[in-house]
Image (cartoon, rainbow, N blue to C red; front, side, top):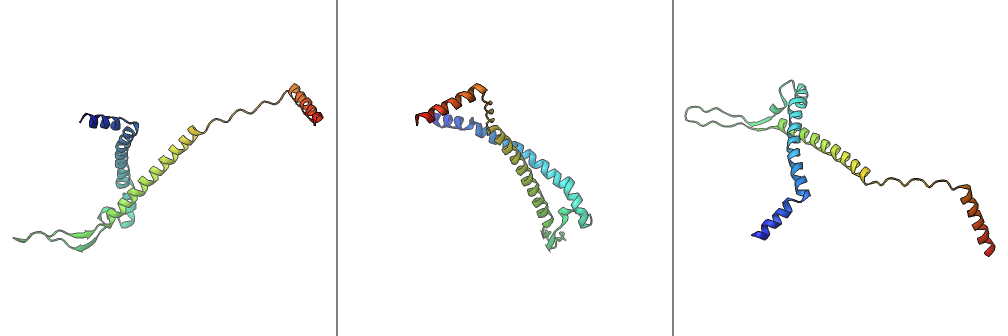
Length: 144
């Protein structure tokens, strides 16, 4: 049991697990923000195209519901709620786009961190260095 606990402690305290936990928490909060954006801002504007009926209310009724009458039980409505489906698609695209932008930004930051600074350009040789180089070349040519 002691080995199990020490292995678990080592696993749980690794940086990647903690980073992942923070990511899950932030992702959950981000999901709520996106859902609010879609439900409270985007969908009301889009529902104007449906005559103000509301996007969540768009559905195709397969079997109409009936209220309970006497000893007969109520029958629930069976419908295809395509308005909710469209809303979830919009949610998905907003979240996917936001993650794409965030990852692109993070990759650019990592790329800047990974790129080493260019080495400074070599200084121009002095007149003495140029003259010594010429003398060396002349001497090498005489030996041949």
